[in-house]
Image 1 (cartoon, one colour):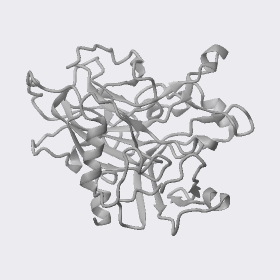
Image 2 (image 1 turned 45 degrees about the vertical axis):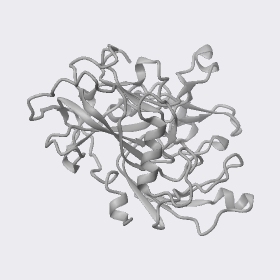
Image 3 (image 1 turned 30 degrees about the vertical axis):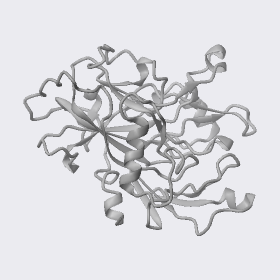
Length: 345
């Protein structure tokens, strides 16, 4: 598969997120969902993880698997209400899913929820520290099938502007992460390239310098291999020698609370991201009205037919490895009869 084909979804646009203003969309609204509509994912249009410790295992790659095979395996894991788990790998890795109906945008309410495996560290609330534990935020893009062709076209994608899109310094843990020396910038036009390793590592030094990456901020580094996951981290069904991903990059949310690299807490962003809050929390629900266009202007979509989730932070956290968003499904809250006000986060 050619490089420009594989990167067709991540490079649709690199948003410039500015002050949000209202910009209504054309469209007369959505048709009511059919009575037999599923609240869950029914299609997987694309899946391309960035290199990471769970890549090629969640879902499992087998020799000879193609892009189409991997898409099917992802659907088998997260389609319906199966609640399996897939990994998007490091920054930029993504999945694109679809439904058998349009998820309606209801004013003042959250419309869908992306399921992941985020959880809190028990010590944090008890100590008065902000909510955190294992939160690996994924950025969400949504598309309304305006022309009805059954595919998300390039001009139909909009990004959900979560809390850090709007005010990074407003995150409850911002000062803790800044004091540690984390990269606290929000990059609205970020790009990173991962290079396929010439061989798999055989010693500790090679494991620490496993997959080289470089970004458009002048930074370079390596995705390391850890002792717990020693399968290839570069997606094995991809043929080319490098992968480039573009999008918004969030501030680094992992704080080493041990001071010696043995205990990291990944803090929760206030709202608006996948795999950032527990599945049962209002904080994991998403309002379609949080979508913005390339210039950061708010848009009013009647609903969404496609959802893209991509890993939103470029960071490693000691033996926890890279920040890699995990996804276990998507739920249409309206079909499930769940009402969550959009200000309930």
